[in-house]
Figure (cartoon, chains in turn purple, yellow):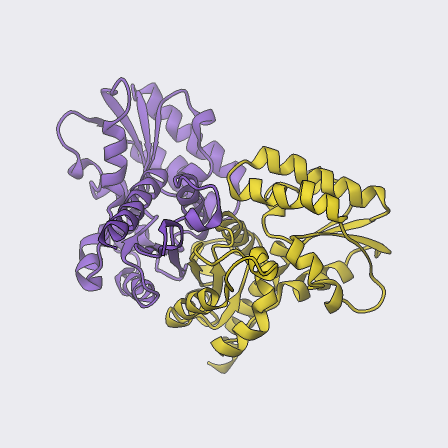
Length: 244
Length: 244
């Protein structure tokens, strides 16, 4: 087997949260891979089972836990031969530790991937705006995982209720333009209060906000996780070649 | 379990040929599904293993058969719980019958899906241009599966060599603009010779040609297969509900 036909290091994508965010993640995996032909791309298996109960509702105590459904979906990936599991859904990472223990497969954490790219920004910004679901914000998923030196700015409760949550729901419901307007309003609030970079920390957000939406440097957590997963797969391919 | 959380009818996508065409197919699955929230979307598992040997080279006798790799990839889907297998790669359908026998899972044929949509076009066109790989064209994959009443027009050997094959390779290599120009030239040749509709019968082609690329009605085989797969999944969900 040469490098091109090597299937070492199959990335498992625990997706469906939402389905379009999974598609966006898969496109970013392809874009993150240096390849001139099909066979040079990295092998991927995906479980996109959108029936996982709503993560934000569960965190608020208003709905059932997504953990059993996440585990069942992850077990589909294990059965399909995944050597790594990544979840293109920030809020689902509230159940990351429990899931990783139960699955017994290596996983990459989306917050680590995003924070690594934030740290690598040129002209490292002092104040960073965080756009994410109510559950991701209020659980401290990002802020508690951050080292010293980042000054976070979060949307206010009013902005979460009026812009962020309805914006994410609009994207999930296929109303992209409405979603874009709402999420742009949330981004503008952060910028007005002094944010000099934005972290897009819900996978629905980069579906409608991009470099053209804001003057500020953006860290797209979806793209950051995709790049980290590709590095893992290429590293496994390299290791396999050296062992051969 | 209500309709929204029902996981009956998991669509298995045998992908990676190429990886970006698989992403396009998955996006078209989402677009073909009437859904206002994540949980209403259909469950999907994907095996995107791009190491499948080149289909056109194999058909020409210039490379190894893709069948063992297709079967191994299909078995990942079976292990992950797929109830149906679809392949967003037209040329791979040269191995459809052998694969279906070996996998023992229901499969939908991309050519049947595309021909159904061609038959449903308003003002059914007399002459239809077929844009596809050398192997799909020369094997008669489409023309031999068509009933009476369709007058096919194919690219000439010169157009295949100068426009179609290099155009598809450019898309696979990430050079979309170059691919678009080449494939548009192939479409123009068909139109000049009298085509009044076009079937985009290689999954790389709709990545760069769309309604804006041609005056003619287009049948996108990728989208047709996605719609057929969603109908299957929604039918399974309905059957499950009635049985409950």
